[in-house]
Every structure is written in C-alpha cells, then in structure tokens.
Image 1 (tube, rainbow, N blue to C red):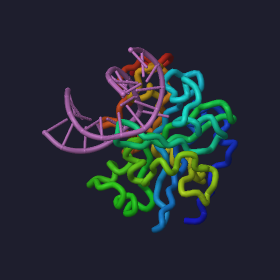
Image 2: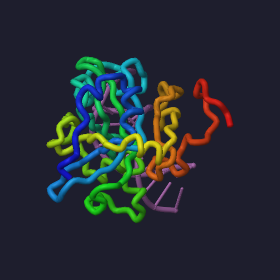
Image 3: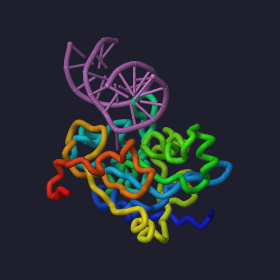
Image 4: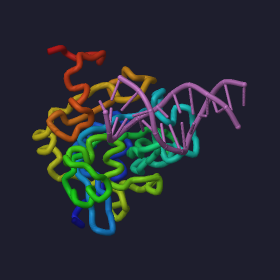
Length: 218
DNA sequence: TAAGTGATGCAT
DNA sequence: TGCATCACTTAA
C-alpha cells in the first residue's frame, strides 16, 4: 500500500483539457486512520480558463482561490446543499483550470468506503462526483491538498498499468459536460465506456446523437 | 421527475 | 439583505 507513487506536478501543468484525458486510469487514493481506499479514475470533466462554466470565470473568490494556485492541488467545493466535488488544479499559478473527477472504480479499501457511504451495490459507492467524495470522506478540509504528495491524506497515484487498464475498460469517449448551462456545448467530458462506474443510469452520453463537432453518427 | 439542501454571487 | 442559481443525489 505504501508503493503508490504520486503523479508529479508537471503532469498537471498542461491544459485541463489534456490532463482530464490523461487522468483516466490513474488512482485516486484517500488515506484514513484505518488504511487507504480509492481506485482508478474512469470519468472526468475539464474546466478551462476561458470557459463560462468554470468557477473561476468571474475572477478570484474565497471559494475558488485554490484554482488560481499552483498545479497539482485539490480543489474541493460544496454544492447543492448536500455534496462535495473534487477537482485537480491545472496550469501555472494565476491561470485557473481544473479537472472535475466524476467517477472512479471502488477498487481498494471497499469496506472503508462503505463505512463512509451506505449503499448495496459497489457501483453506487463512487459512480458520481458527490458519491465518490462521500465514499472517500472528502470535505472542505481537503480543499488545497497537494495531490502530488504521496504522504497527503488525498493524492493521485500513477497506475503502472494505465494503458492496460484503458484498453480493458475503454474506449475513451468524449461528450458534453453534465449539469451545466453555460458553455454546455463544449466536448470536455471524458470517460472509459467499458467501466460500470461511469456516472448516469445508462452511462449518459454514450449513445446520444450529439452536437459534438466531428462526431460520426453510427 | 422533483424536491432537498445551503453556499455563492449578483442585484437591490 | 434578498433571491436566483448551482460542476448533485435520492426516492418515487
């Protein structure tokens, strides 16, 4: 368990649009007093600096300040009066971009995750951004955590077999982002279509004929 | 399909 | 201050 190696900071320095794709298959790891829990990321969304849907679109505020800091930190926010969501901050200090982690597979420490979140099916543990935060016990106190520090309470570890995992759970699909109204047409959601843990009852977006430029209809 | 929940941010 | 909005979830 101590052999999880955090992805380096440079991994997060490109645009969130690039990083969101590259994060698929790597491990989100939460340390608890009783051991680690987590699993491979299977769904992400990118929020860009010139993007009306991005929390940072109207400048620096108390909530979004971490997004303006250095790459590789966790941006955690509270939404809809009930839920937390976690993002990985991208780009250089002063440029606010981030990748929302929307779903992961509940692969390690499932019993710990079940202590944080009561569900019957494993899939319901982490198949959505609010769900995975509850399962991993992620709250405000983790806002700003260094995801590049394998000693941190929350970090992202390199999956040595990431290519194999993507082959197995792929293909990677791209769709529009979920639950937003502004800049809603941008193709900035990425997921591994073969994973059961992708959010949405029918893995939304997998077969809707869409407005995505360049998409070939089947 | 809709209501719950509360922080946020812009309009008064 | 007030109020609409919000990167969601659950129960029905």
